[in-house]
Image (cartoon, rainbow, N blue to C red; front, side, top):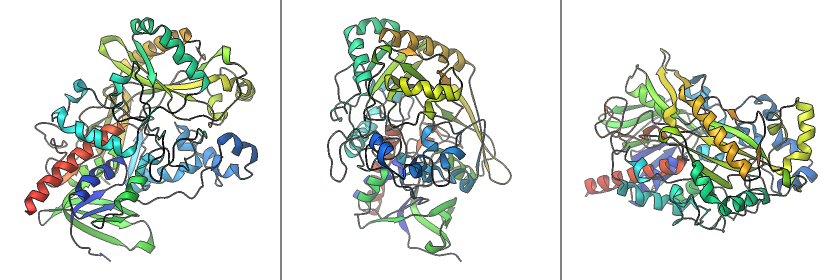
Length: 536
C-alpha cells in the first residue's frame, strides 16, 4: 500500500558526510527538509576501555574482535581490516544486495547505515590546492567558505607549522595535533634534522591532519589514546556524521526517516520525486515522496545507479578510484619497545613527487589496536612462525599506505537488463611502474629515518579497495547526459542534484571526504539562496 506524505522543499537521500553537509545551509535557511537513509545501526558494542586493557580483562572480547557470528573470519578475504571488524559490520551490511550492485574485479563498498561510511573511515582530511580546483567548473572562492564551515563544524586536529602545511591547507581551522607514538616521533625528528635532503629526493613529511578531536567539544570528548580507533570510539573523538545528524534533528523544519531505501528517482508533475520502501515492517510499506529539490547523497555507487535508472542511461559511465598500496616498517633501534595505548589513525604523513609530475600521498599508523593476524600476511614466513616473530617485533613496527590519483584506475559502470549496476575496474598500466617508483623512494627515505620496509610487505590493493569512489557524474561547465552542472544538478533531470563523491570533477591522491563535504555545503548554500529568493 502506498503512503503519501506532505511535500517538502528538499529531500536528501543519505545521511553520510555529504548528506548532512548539504542539509545544514538548507535547514538554516528555514527550508523544510526531509532526510532518508537505510537506518542500519550497530548491534555490537565497541570496547569502552583502552584496547590493551580490554585484551587483558574483557571476558567478552570475542564479541567485538570476532563477532558472535564469526564475522571477522567470514570476511577474512576483505581488503581492509575495517571490513572485518564486527563493530562495523552494520556499516557495510547488505549494501550491494539491497542496492543491486555487483563488482567485477572491483571492491563495491558503500553503506546503508545512519551516518554512512563516516562510521568507519580513516578521518584523513585535506583541502584541494588552487591548481587542483581548476578541474572544477567554479571559482576556488566559492568553495573556500564551505571548506571553512565544514572544518570548523567537524573538528580537525594536526595544526603544525611543518612541511605539509601547504599541502593540507588546513592549519587555520585545525587544533593541536594528537600525541604521536615514540616510533613516529623519532622518525619525524630525524627528518626535521635533514629535511632538505628529503626534499631533494622528492618527499616531504609532516603531521597528519585528521577529523579527530584533540580538545573536548560539546558532547564529543578529546582522543584519550585508547587505541580503539579500528573498533569504534565511545568518546566520539572521531568525526561521524551521526553527530551532525543529532544536531540537525533539533531543527523543527528538519525531518528524518531512517530505514527507507530509495529505489527510483523521477519527475512527477515536473517535480523531483523519490520512490522507495521501508526496510522494516514496523516503519510502514512503500512510499512516494516529492519535493522542489532532491539531493542524492547515497554514496557514489548507489547515487550513480539511481541516476542511471532515472535517465534511462544504458551506456557505460566511467568512475575514478585511487590506487592504494600498504606496507610495513620495522625500526630496529626500537626493538623491545613496550606496547602502549596510542592513537590508531594517521599520525605521520608524507607527500611525494614521482616522474611526470605525478603526486602520491600516504600516512603511517601505530600497530596497537590491530590484531597480530592482520600483519602476519606481510611476513616472509609461514603464518604460525610469522605470528610468533611478530609478537616480539610488532611494538617496533608501523604500517603505512600510499595513494595515487584516481585517474589511474579505469572503472566502468553499466546497468544490465535487470537494472543491476555492474562495476568493472582495473588499474592503468602505469600504476605498476608508479607504485614501484613509490616503493623505492619510500624504502630509501625510511631507511634514512631508521626504518626498514619489510620484504614483501608492499602490497597493491585490489581496485576499489581504497573506498574512494568518485567522478561518475562529474560537474562540468557545459554538461551532457551523465554529467552535472556547477551546482551538481543532473543534466536531463531538473531539480535533482548530486552532492556526494559522484559529482566531483577530479579525484586527487589526497583524502577526498572534506572536499565532498565542502562541495555539498557549497551546493546547499546556492540552492538555499535560490529557493528562499524564489519564495519571496
